[in-house]
Length: 247
Image (cartoon, rainbow, N blue to C red):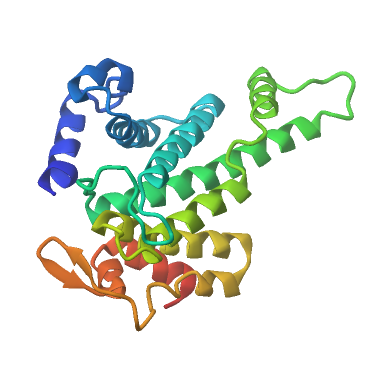
């Protein structure tokens, strides 16, 4: 826990305060080219980079591909809905805080992309009817990139990943602690997304798995906690749940 909560931030502050960490390709040999490790590393370091610089349209699209790769790998190695085990490793363990941070940032970048896209199209529309004017160069570049990546941050795909992560962590009796963490924090994230989309009934319904009285306890370190206790134990998750769902 100290490595994620403290050491990573200290190393980042010392060596990469305003720059990117080494690319996944540059450190691939350190982990034997393990795709899941590299994908987790990519998400973690990309999250840092976008926090210290204003992301370009290419950065935003790269973020989309990074999350899709990570979630596809996690889902490929997850227990099946029918309770059968996958062929993936059973040793994967991510802290509850780390699981929530991944999902929180996923939706934050989705929201940022939607705002960026709207701003870009609005800027272009302002000069569209004036033959003597043309969009600024950066607006044209952004529109070109958006046109080439129309599926980037599609809300249907964002919803798909969140629903799948909830399902694999709650429907399989063989789900590990990490997949259960991802499931419950995905439900918090899904509640936030439905609130942003204006579907307040769905926002509340997304939390059913957390307040299910028949839900099994989940192992958090050496403790056994209910899903509600798990979420309340990660303050940003509890804050998001309270703010968006009012519970």
